[in-house]
Length: 251
Length: 172
Image (cartoon, rainbow over all chains, first blue to last red):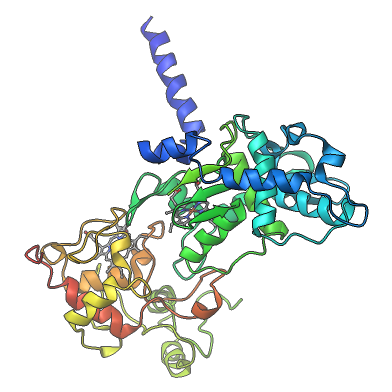
């Protein structure tokens, strides 16, 4: 009997040790910000979803096609954002949601390219990610993706910048501590694209990576480079199982 | 990559190299002298010697000014120490709690001990999140304007050390 209890205790403790605290940044929000995220009429990120819907239906390019002409309702892409980034074996590279939409836009719709972090691209990525709200993050990190995944892990753990800090220093070692007024979260990516009050706007996962790199005075990463995408893949894997919240709200 | 412990012309020695030279290479009497003569280029701050768990001599022979040190510690673009520590900076509303409270640090540490912790904390504890303020060595992917520069200059570190050495808990 005692032995069973001990085993049970061991099992619970080790499950905990094996799965470092993977709580959504939502858990650090006060009641006001939770309410803001939860109410679609108040959530500022929903403005981008609305704008995304208009763009989704807008004909563009030489053949005057809209996203809807090929994909139908956005909900048809429900099972997409939660599985990105993913490795494309034909091109031999990682793609994230921004890149898939940018590619579709120039190659299939043959319309003018959407630039990174432009309001139009953010509107479309937020619309598509919003379709996956509630679905668990689930990225493939084995097989052909495994090299990129290991690169991403190494990048997360490598100290960088003049302040010589790694992502892991802050989001693993210091999680829960206060960096000035800001409580450091586990660095999960299940909320993106998300509205940050400090940005007074919406941003992608790659914008967050840029922000954190800037904080330690590190070189920015090209958001379409395989290094940046490998880091994003690792972040998505760390966030595995968490429900997608796009558009989330954060401080 | 230069061989371990071999000084590279044109930059100053790191503490680790100094230690190596002191501990393992003192037989090559000329080496340390040579390295010091070759230094000058590069923006690393002064070489220093760790004695016990402190640095006894002021960096670069500078004299610290506590008033200037308070400003260096507070400024976001310079020390920004209150991002991690509680400090007597009444105009600064949010202080971090990553590192220990420093409001009475002089009652716990000598100036030499404080100097080592500010200049080269990771020499004692490589895992620490507190960066070395007196080195630009071994850093990766540093953004352009900061590349090759230590976070603070010798003078700024001496100023901060002078200010911290005056903190006994009585300041507001």
